[in-house]
Length: 244
Image (tube, rainbow, N blue to C red; front, top):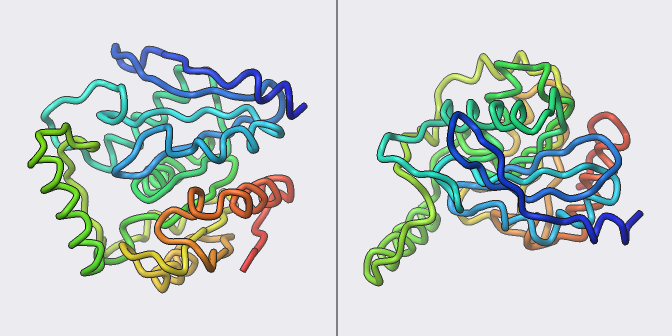
C-alpha cells in the first residue's frame, strides 16, 4: 500500500465558489483526511506528512482562501471566511465528512467548521490552534521581522489581509463540538506558549493533549515521524489518545 500511496501524490484543482482551488491529493484507500495549513504557509507545509498519512487515508491538502496558488482579494479574511471555504472545498471534492487536521489558523478554521457543521468532522487533530491566548512577545517580534523583510525585498506576503482575534473571550460555541479531538502542541512554541493547550483541552469536549518535547510552533514539521505516528494512532483508535 505504501508504494501505491507514494505514486499517487498529485496536484489537483477544483472550482470552489467560481474560483480555482489548488490542493494536493494522495492515497487511494481508507477514510478521508483533510490537512489545513497555518496562517503563514500553504499546502506544502504538509510535505513531511502527506505520504505517511496517505498509507492509511485518502488525503486532501488544500491551499486556503487567499493562500498559495489560490485567488486573493482585498477583503478582510476572517476565521468564518476560512471555515466556510473549508466546508465548500469539501463539498466540491465530494466529501460529506472527513477527519480534519489543522495547524494554527487552519486548526481554528477546523474548529469553527466542526462547531457549525458537526456532520462534516469525523474527528479533529488541532495543532496549536489560535484564539486561546495572545501572541507572545517573541512571536510578535518574529512575525514583524518576517513582514518587514517581505516588504523590504518587495516579496508578496504569504498571507492575505487578515481580520482575526487571537485572544477570543468566548468559546462557548466550541463546547458543543462532538468530534473526538487530539490537541497537539510544541514544548518550545515561540508564538503561542504550550500552556495555552490546557485552555483548549478544557474547552473542547472529548479531547486529549499531546505535547511534543522538541518542537516549536509546527510539530508536524519539527518532529514529522512522531507526529505522523500520533495522528495515525489517534485516528485508528477512534478517540483521544494522549501521546505526552
